[in-house]
Image (cartoon, rainbow, N blue to C red; front, side, top):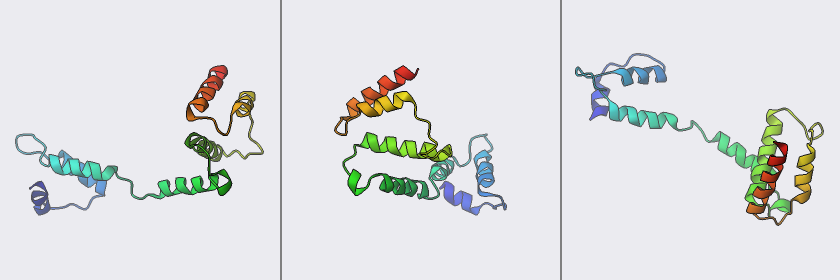
Length: 132
């Protein structure tokens, strides 16, 4: 019903967000929102991403990290590698210029390729407590 009412009203030439802000502020003579259901729908619609490029980018990065030789990595290892890669990219750091903390080396030495996710979490907690 609201959509049909709204369709009959004049539409000013505004940017989409300004337009819907005006519609949100439209009230009935009693002061209630004129289109509450329509605004709920538009709010949900506006929260959706315009594309899935960011997700595709992550999958591309994941494909570079998880190769045929590294196909048995646990999910925590994959997440850690992706986070490290993204952080290095965001901070404009190369592997050659990366400063490695002694605690990181100790943690890497303790890691086992067959460690469970729980063992990995415990080792990380231990490292973080030492760094604090």
